[in-house]
Amino acid sequence: MIERAGAGQLRRLVVLRHAKSAWPEGVADHERPLGPRGYRDAPEAGRVLAASDLLPDLALCSTAVRARHTWELASAQWGSPPPVRFDPELYGADVPELLTAVRRTPPEVVTLLLVGHNPGLEELVLTLAGDGLDDSLEEVRLKFPTAAIAVLAWHGATWRSLDPGAALLTSVMVARGRKG
Figure 1 (cartoon, rainbow, N blue to C red):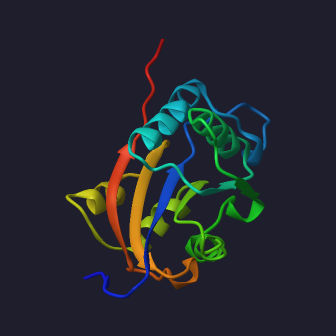
Figure 2: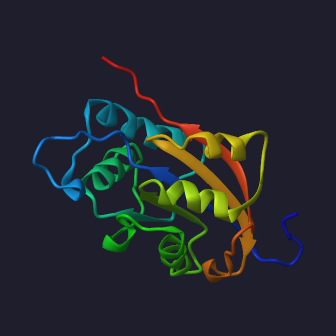
């Protein structure tokens, strides 16, 4: 059960896996761009976040090209995108590295968007979620595809207090743009 009484402000961590990438020959993994589906799905991710009232106060984004392009296309769907920090440590990060980055978030940030990669993001969501609404935990365990969005809610005075199992996984969505 997730502690709520006297535990601090309700905070949300929104985890967005980068949109579908291309695999051009001779291009280093860090430099891989989005593929055609990625260019459709990334803006849709921005629209989904806006429609779900999940616009962040701050975004943390991997420096990989596909993650940066996902951020740029998603945030272009909002009137005023929030500040973004491009963090090279998020590329290929595991759970401890991701959690360290999240815990550095200033306390005035209520909703944080994390844009990055699997398997780290999927493992982070499963590590932080002590429980989930409906079958959200099972969805993430089965697959956290490109352009997937997971929303974790928890109560805390600061981001430093976010511990494994402390959050509720409130929703999982997969942004898919239309062809055409």
